[in-house]
Image (cartoon, rainbow, N blue to C red; front, side, top):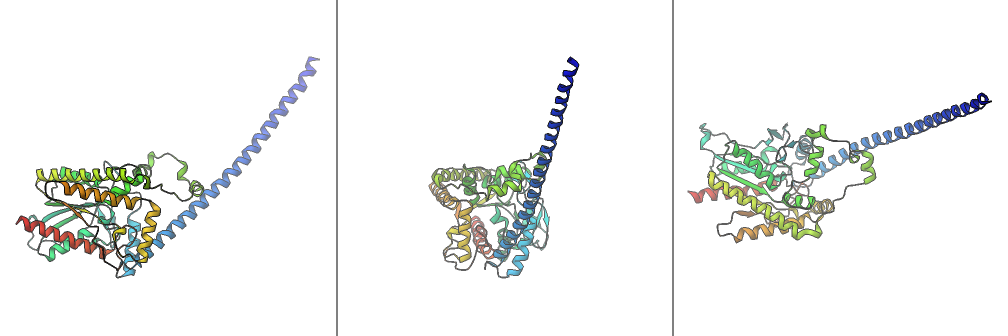
Length: 394
């Protein structure tokens, strides 16, 4: 009897195993189908965003080239397309400074060892020691985001000095996205190599404000966490995260920055302190190593009156990208200038906010960067200041 009872129990157990196996197989098939569909959607979205992003870049290039900021729009478009190939964001990760420019060789744009090529006239007598050695440090506006090698601000300063009879070697150490502290560290690296200039020029300020607005506190590199996570040099250590998938980009929608309108006063105080402290530090080094300094607070698009229709759209785009950043820079700049005027010694800051005032023609090729005509106006001012600086010494 016991033997007969065990047979039904065995049959029931076998049926349960079969049922569970069948259920597991069905679940695996369903999971595989869902996984395949998700993979297909991911790949489709990847191709869509690739095509969409390329179309947006092409539109931005064409809009900038034909904005009126360039005399030869077709030539400008050719350069701007090359710039897209040369500067792929984020920049490669670098120790201490956070980033560096990738080397590139092109028709209009050339970078070697992280330094963009600058126009320089070789001395006719071969005596390079007689040349004035000038370093430039700054961010994308100084680097020449909207300009060919020979028409960046440093290149145009070199040309202006030659016209005035000054032989100079000019080096453009600017890097896209550099805040003043990053520029200072790059300068220290050059001094550490005993590469001491006769004159160093720091041009910027806007990135200091944008960084404070974007990161929520002053003194940090702009998009520093993104550099650490996304830099190609760091890819081997990057873990797979949800935000790396196209599906998450689709579900999350366009990334919106919260901005900094609610904290303008505190952030501008901090950004002004950081910027001014860097200036004082550089001045201290200059007294020890016997080089001269010039500091320039760059203009921003909202300073230009009047603006063209294209430039007005640039203001709106910038405000939409990082609300409050323009106001923060205006406040920060006012506070830096006030600190400079309070000092007992002679003022060293040059505030360029009015340099495009009254200029009705297009100057800006996007929301932050000038075309080559804007560079020319700024270079003339800097060259005149250099000539005055050395004339006073004489």
